[in-house]
Image 1 (spheres, rainbow, N blue to C red):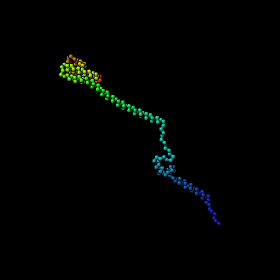
Image 2: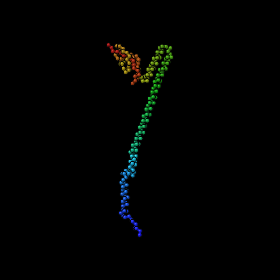
Image 3: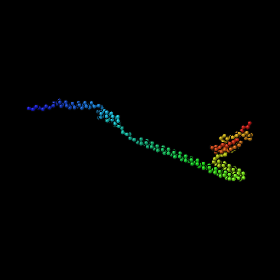
Length: 216
């Protein structure tokens, strides 16, 4: 007769699954915490975090969207920058126009002064052309030319300083000598040696004068 087949007992069947569970638990427990949390070995997890990669479950904030107030502020800044650049360009253009106008006025004034003196030069040349004429006629011609020159200075705005008998004024006169005389008040102009010329706010040349001294 053949021997009956031996079947594993229920105790043996229960022991086998229990051994697998213990092995699984041991394997999970023996893993490091870093590997369990990130799913990667500890060394790789540390390198990934150092490189800036987000950890498992970590969410980085996205770029901040521009709000309506930010757009309005940027538009205002652009407008202010444009207005500032326009104002700067306008100032530069005004400066250039002023410099050109000043140069033009200076050249026009020089031409006007020169044209005023041209008739005086013409008369002097005529007088030299008649040098052999009557001396009395020459003297009269020179006197007319002198008066013509004085008139030119007057038209240019300069007054002749040649008065006598007025108090000495150091802002208009230059005392070249002092004269002792009983016919004039001390400190007054008794003689004009060289006339001066002055405008309202410009002294072209002071008058060289003789001044009466104090009487002893």
